[in-house]
Image 1 (tube, rainbow, N blue to C red):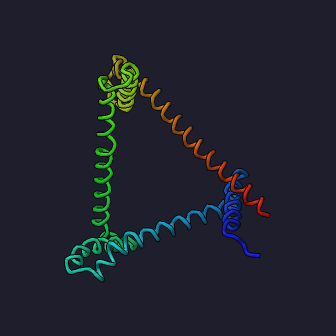
Image 2 (cartoon, helix red, strand yellow; image 1 turned 90 degrees about the horizontal axis):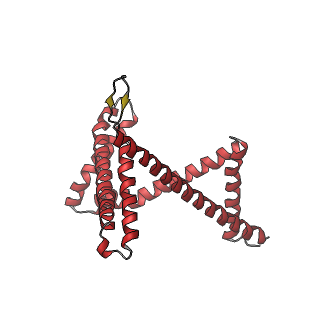
Image 3 (cartoon, one colour; image 1 turned 30 degrees about the horizontal axis):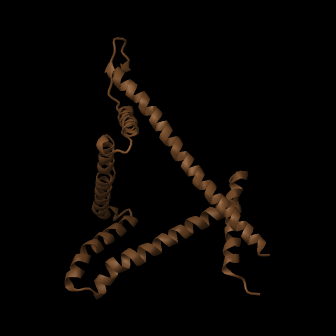
Length: 222
C-alpha cells in the first residue's frame, strides 16, 4: 500500500504538536527534541534562502560570470565578508570590528529610514487627514475619531517624557498637564497591548482549530 504525502505530513504534524504540548507537564526531553528540530529546520531554511537568493546571485555569480565592473563592485562586500570571518578567532577579531560597525550602521540607517518614511510620516498624514471634515462621509464620527487618536498619541508620547522638577520637599514631580496626559497615555498603551494580545490569541486559536481539523482528516484516513 502506498503511503500518501498527506498521511506523512499529518503524522509528523501530530507528533510535533504533541512534543510541544508536552511542555505543559514541565521541561522534558520530548519538548527539547521538538524545539531542537524546529530550530534546526528554521536555521537550515534561512541558510538555504540566504545562499540561493543572496550569496549566489549577488556574490558568487557576478564574481565568476560577471564583467570586470561587476567583479570590482563585488570585491568590497567580499572583503567585508572576509573581515567578518576574522571575528571567529579572538586573536583576529579586531580585524572584523570595522566590518561589523559598517553592517550595524547600514542596518540602523535602513531601520530608521524605514520607520520614518514607512511609519511616522504616513501615520502623521493619516491623522491629519482625519480632521479634513470636508471629505468625510460622517464629519462628526471623523472628528471624534481624530480627537481620540490625537489625544492617545499625545498621551503616549507624554508617558515616555521623564522630565521633572524638584518640589519643596525634595521629591521629583512632573507638571500637572504632563502627568494628566501620561495617565491618558497609560490607558492607551494598556488598550493597545490588550488588542495585540487578543489578536495573537485569536491567531493562535485559529491555528489550533486548523490543526485539530487536520488531525481529524488524518485519523479518518485509517
